[in-house]
Length: 275
Ligand SMILES: [Zn+2]
Picture 1 (cartoon, rainbow, N blue to C red):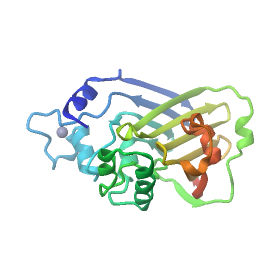
Picture 2: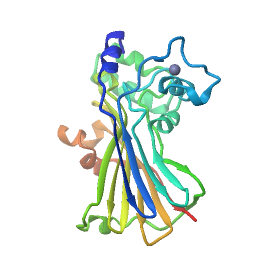
Picture 3: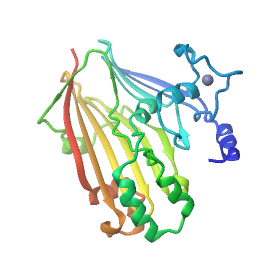
Picture 4: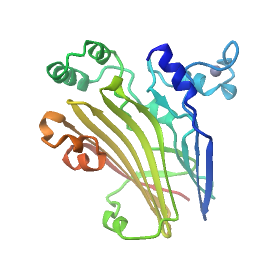
């Protein structure tokens, strides 16, 4: 990113937005605000030893061990689901980015080959061989605070039940971070929630598209039936090389459609109980 781009990105502020809704014993709230500054706003910088007073920029610099961050990080975009017993599930960009690997990945080499055949963009190739995961792939599944118990389960989210027509009491979606891979695709991490009279459903999605090369999706689905004392959390990682997908171009930009064409890489199924 050039200095000019950074400055214009800093100016692009979004209005601070906050909402809270009670669905006893649950409270669902979100905050939404501007993107991360590209430097510390304090004169002389924050005191690195005073963790509680670090600005967002210094917090990210300290905790995310990557040589660069995505173009757009929304540090204040946080979705929280709290139970009156003190258990909290939240979704925030910091914890998502902490899980991005700071080291070379096998897929980089595979991509670089395919990329070379399809593009003559030496600048981007230079970036691709950098020793960190420049795709910002994360296996973030949300942050659990409090006395939850997590275990594997054979129980699955009832997808058919979710398709039934029900009234939506609350709906919201938030982008946690986004990068345009120097105009060669996109990497987006976002979360959406919908609350219905007897249940809630959350989809946290990391979507990666490297133009002409690769599509990858890491989805975390969380479902709670208000009659039970647990959440179901399903994580799936899928991907496909664009040359193998053989789908029209518009499909590649629509995560919902392209997901049906991707191959499964990993999956995990958890039951998360609260007292
Ligand atoms: Zn600072």
